[in-house]
Structures are given as structure tokens and as C-alpha cells.
Image: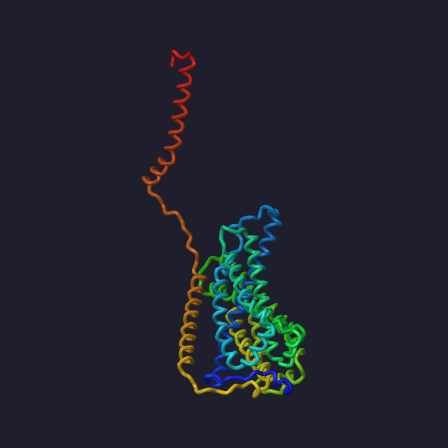
Length: 426
């Protein structure tokens, strides 16, 4: 909980152009959308890198370290390579609305925490741009070797994970104004909230969530293809194997969430832990609902039902986001951070809602098109039957150069035999 002795550290806040409840609801909604997309992009990137690394090492063991230059024709196809850069772009753009709403509601907290770690915070966009560039290098078809593309993807994954670590530092520092006095000793903007016991378990919780959602996102197209595609048994078995492998990522990451969540829970102070053990009815209800949906999602994933797993996994993210919001409110104090409200301005809010709905519709249509193309069978180009006349003409065209070469060799031999009698015979 916030200590009243640190209230003097809080800057004076101007009013916000709208009701606190409306902005809080928009913050909650946009944050969930951003969180789902961020988890999907980072998780898919990590899983793709691990799969490519395994394939590369396996190819080198078979063919030798100097011979695995080209990708095998029967090797795995990573169709998500072209989607990862687009996913990063959408994640960045979808992360702007919740951050703006966060600035409106918690301006005196987010600005101070960002200033304390200013050097790291200003590097966030550079880190994302470098990761974005590495994902495009991973898309290169023939200009880079498989090892180079895998290396670029691995560096992008590390940069994205480091970016998540910076965000965790800022969000935890936001909730602890009592640590802001470090500015008197370290005012250069290089402070990281490493001494906070919540940082590591919270970061681990986020990374495991990314792996779970990423595996689920890779399983959904395979499930869709199995349901909509009338394919041969071999192709159906390939889709089923890919779905099973992706859901295994979800199962293992979700099981690891249990000790990670317990670690994060124990890192909280006593008053914060009591919120989820009966001290706060909404927080306790959200915690119980999250555990129930967690068990249901694991059961559905174990039965290899990707759609049912997703149906149970999305409410888990919603419950976790709600618990996070209630925890932040309790740690900061419900009345200490609420700014005054200026007269409501409907224009900006209306423009935002229209843009949000249009963007959601476009993303929905893009997802439908991608799933439809994923389930569409690849056409097999079979040669059309030739008529007898076309076959004779094709054979004639193929035989003509050989006949001309044989005729030229025969003429050369006759000319050489005629000249054996001397220059007079030629």
C-alpha cells in the first residue's frame, strides 16, 4: 500500500477530459487487446526460433557442419515468418491506446517512474526497431543462409524479451513511490527496479504467458485446417502433429505458471495478498475464476481441442488483467491518484471509439482471410495429356539438335579422311 509519508513526492495533476470510469474501462479493454497480441507475437517468435534451431542442428548432424547451407525441400515450413513483422507493428500500434489512458489516470506515477529509468525507457523504441529489423531479415528467402536467418530471429527474440523486462521495471516502479527517493542518489535516469521482489516473478509470469498463448496461436490454424480441409491422410496427419506440438507448448507453459504465480503471490506484501484471499470480493472472485478457467483450458489442451482451449484461455487473460488493475488500485490507494475531471469532451472519445471499432473489424477480416488461406489445399500441377501429333512434334524438337550434332560430326570425319592423301586430294 502507498505510504502517506510519500505523498509529498507526487506531482500536482491537471484534470482529465472525461469520467474516470470511462477511461478506466477503455484502459482495461485496450490493454487486454494489446496483451493478447503481444503474448501471441512474442510466444510465436520464441517457438519459431526454437523449432528452427532444432531443425538447423538436426540438419548439421546429418550432413555435417559445412553442408547445411540450403533448406531441405522436405523440411518444416515456417509460414509465420511473414506474419511476425506485421504482428510487431500491430502490437506497437495497439499498445499506444492503453499507454495513453494510463497516462491520463496515473500521470503523476508513470511520468516519475519513467524519468527515474529515462535512459532505459528511451531505449524501448530502439530495441523494438532492431527486433523489427531482425524479423524482416528472418523473412529473407535466398539472400541469407538458414543459420543467418535463425541468428537474426534469435537476436530479435532476445530484444523483445529485454523490452518486456524494461516494461516490468517501469510498471513495478510506478506502484512503489517510496522508492522514488533514489533520485537523490541516482538522478541520471539509469535506475532499474531490480531490488523489488515482484520484478522477477512478474517477468517470469509474462514470459510463460507468451509461450502459452504463442503455442495456442500456432495450434488454431492447424485445428481450422483439420476441420475445413478434405485432405489426404498424410496431410491431415501432418496438421494433427503440428497441432499436438503447439498445444504441448501451451500445456507445459501453463503448468509452469502455477509455481510462477505462487512466487509472484508470495512476493506481495500481506495487505496485497489479502485481496485475493477474501479481503476484496471482486479480486477473490477473479482469482477463483482464473483458476477454474486454467483447469478447463488444460483439460481441453490435453484432449487436443484447440478452439475449446482458446475459449477457456481468453477469460484467463481477462481475469489476470482485472486482478492486476485491482492490485494497482490497492497499492496506490483509490483516492490518492484520482485526478480531477474537466468538462467532458465527446469529440476525441467518439473519434477514438470509431477508430477502435474500424481497426477491430479490419483485424477480424485479416484473421479470417489468413485462416481461410491456411486451410486451402495447395494445388498440385499435373501435366495435361498430350495428343499424338503434339507428342511427335515434341519428340522432333528434342531430337533435332542431336541429329544436327551427329551430322556435323560425320561431315568432319569425312573431311579428315579425304585429306589423308595430301594437299592435292583436298
